[in-house]
Amino acid sequence: MYNFFTLRPKQSAYFIILFLAIFSAIYNAFLPLHGDEAYYWMWSHHLQNGYYDHPPMIAYLIYLTNFISESQWGVRLVNVFSFSIAALYIFKLSSEMFDEHIALNAVIIFSSLILVHAGYIITTPDSPLILFWTLSLYYVYKALFDNKWSDFIVAGFMLGFMMLSKYTSILLIVSIVLFILLKRRDILFNIKFYTATIIALTIVSPMLLWNYQNDWISFHFQLEHGSSESFKISLSSTLEYILGQFMVFSPVFAALLFFYLAKDKLYIKEEKLFFLAVVTLTTLLFFLYKSLFKSMALNYAAPAYVSAVILLAYIISRHELQKSFKIGLYIALFLTLIGRFGLLFYLEIFQDRMYGNKEAITLVEKNAQAGDAFYGDHLTITALLEFYLKGHPQADLAVASRFSQYDMWREIGYLKNGLVLTSDAKEAELTKNYKNVRLVDTLTVQKGPKGNKTFYIYRVSDAIN
Image 1 (tube, helix red, strand yellow):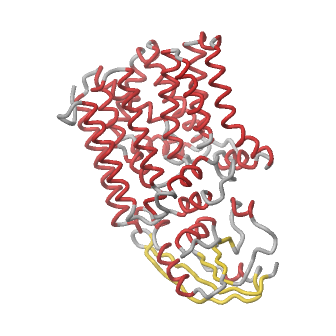
Image 2 (cartoon, rainbow, N blue to C red):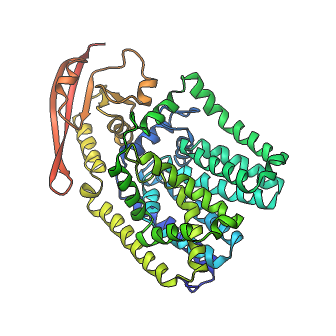
Image 3 (cartoon, one colour):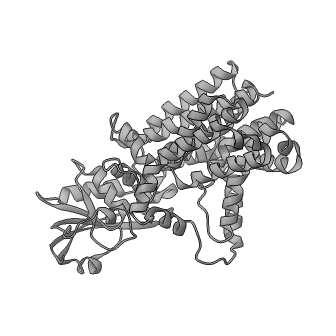
């Protein structure tokens, strides 16, 4: 079997995980925050049982890392911890299911994927989802196959934490239920199974109560956000989804995985392999179905690749695909290096939404006067103002934008005299809320390979509340 390192498999795996964690923590210090990251950081200063956009786990984890640092790299420690622990448990699960050589290759595959490296960089609810999805996968497997009380109890906690991370976590629950119904119906007569279920429901109940008290607003948002208003089939979005999976999982790795799952009936007959296959395919096929009607973001199906890397490592070992493994690995690393290098040195091209915001906020600070309130024209600009301005002053939106957590917290008469940062000219909209609106500064930066974008800073006074 091909191994990438000459150390023993466990030592090699731990070395990869530790190296990538340290490298990512340093790397993350040099990238400005994405607006969504600042938005979730803002939540960490207003802890509650639920939020308009997502469940609360991302806020809880950022709250903990705030004790280490509230800098850019500090906010992203959530990612470093989440993906490092996930990689560790991928090794543990692979070792217990197969052997340490397969486990090492599973970690190598996981650590090479551009999708995983994106997860190490940008802080989103996907970070805790990947963490607790992986931990749930491990302890559910242990519970189902070893039948120990301790594993069932820990599985209940992990499943609860997973459901507090992102609503798409329900797909792992569906996968587990499918596996039990198809392969292990004896579990339905096991008191340990129901104990784990009660633990998970107890943990998730405060979030459900928050949603109930707020008319299920968060569930409604996610259903509307992830669904199309019509059932008109869009083959272009489906093709985009399929090609996207081949990109984020490496073309060779994706081809090997899907080919052997379709070809070899062993992955249906053998319980361990079927467990991995049903978890992988339930998520991938669900979003494939959704892509028939609406474009799906590449990160939506990301949890499927936790079990997929284990399954692929086994496939490579069973079918002696060492050459294919090397080629797939080189392609995956090439794509990852392009992404890492591009974000660090060509941010205005690779992720223009992150480019220029910090500099624009520095300009806001130069124009600020004592007693000024601060506003943005979108939730991301507003959250970035809170993060980057000295003292982290509370900010809000001064013009109409899509509904967000800011709207849920807002009180009547919130508009004060101060400065407004916008990503487009918004003078006409601002005059609906203020009697006096004056443009005081602008900043034009590059956007994409050839375009540009301009930030506008307005001084506003005499609010029309």
